[in-house]
Image 1 (cartoon, rainbow, N blue to C red):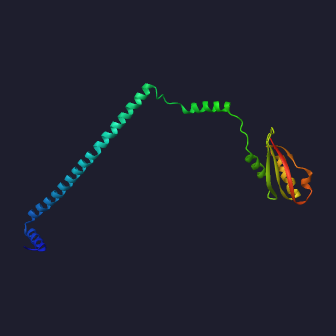
Image 2 (cartoon, rainbow, N blue to C red):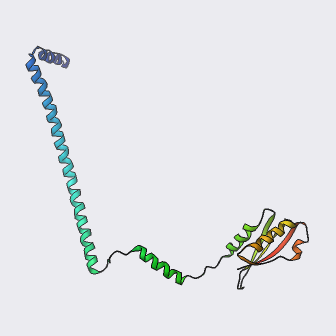
Image 3 (cartoon, one colour):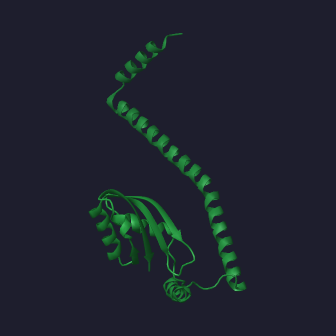
Length: 189
């Protein structure tokens, strides 16, 4: 038996000794074979895709039909009503909520936040005490002021706030000119 390389050499030699027309015919046969293989591969691929996708399409269409039938049955039974105009419903709900709204009361944290927002860097707040049972919220604030002027500015800021109705700062807060302990009673509106 001859090795493969020898066989290839013989075939190439045989093709080269063929006349031109026969070489051309062999080239066409090779092209036709390649085209036939490509066409068969495309057809097989299309068949595989069709066989795979056909059950999926049938299942989707069946489930869609079942869901549509169930929706129709629910509408006929009255379980599902016609669509609602959301904007009109929102307007009606806000009107009802406005009539039922109860004025919100502020929490002690809100009161402390107001006092802290008005304190400067020269005023150090150390304690808060909320007096319960009063018609209006009353908060007692304790702390230390670095200077008498800082305490005066703090009290003036409290008195100028629209959320506060009264500020009681006794004269004893102003005895020391520096690092004075103070106690202020603030009544909110």
